[in-house]
Image (cartoon, rainbow, N blue to C red):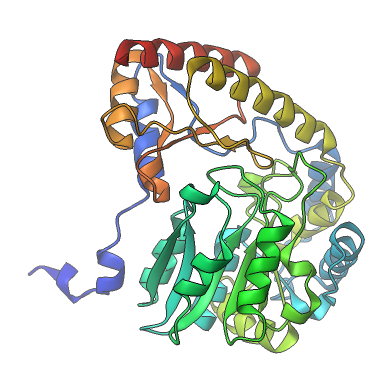
Length: 381
């Protein structure tokens, strides 16, 4: 008896992570350089690890408050106020198992079958999959023709009476593009006062290379609609710790908390003092390293002749390969097989004319990777 057909069709119809699958191809190719995953090559700072060690030694191994230790939520509240000018009380914050659980719990609390969620493309495909698991519909907006900025008129045209939410990710994965103040104003003007939730995914906002960065969460009149998602993974090199948080207006966050506590119960107690310490850590050294790597990568791509939108945040760049007469998966697979270099096909992010290169790798790997990319592109010419 085939039991699969009795399972949730919203789940069985979704593929496992194509990113992990393709990265596995690279890992199984002898001598292959992989510039695929957004995994900082730094280790978690010692001061942060020390706090976790002290907490373990102090037997902080019990159930913690479901929404996070009160002292951690207070620290996050103060950090966000000083750093980003956001006013969320500790009671409006939930500490989650990374940004992924934050998004999953929030979307579960919000979405019903038939709802529509606007997703500007390219995007991180996790959003799409969660929307589909909930039985909702993804409504896509192609931003490649507007410099990867979300145009006000395109957003207005996408909104319908079924629109329940939109995901705004800036700095963006996979492009590294930061939304301009004009873009954010346009988003505000279209959505303000409408019964539409706005997911503000800002997990890369401490890895920004421009002084012009602004947050949609700074619009105070949007607070009832906003769900701000953050992560410790990228700025503090804490990917394996699996810690993030949600900030939202109290009535909204209280509903999300019901899902969160049924999914997770609580984050491990001994991790949370380390998370307080992380908020005191200055990631500027990491950021400057990524900036130098970005400048190197973008310079090499210009020499190779690949068109890009200059990334102003995160650690990705999204070159155009639409003029080589093949889709992005074929391009990337051919490059692995012929040059032993792996980057990710743009189709995994919703645009088949691009590839994503991650530059959170060592300088040596990046130099060798760009040499191999240049060799491959010349072979195509």
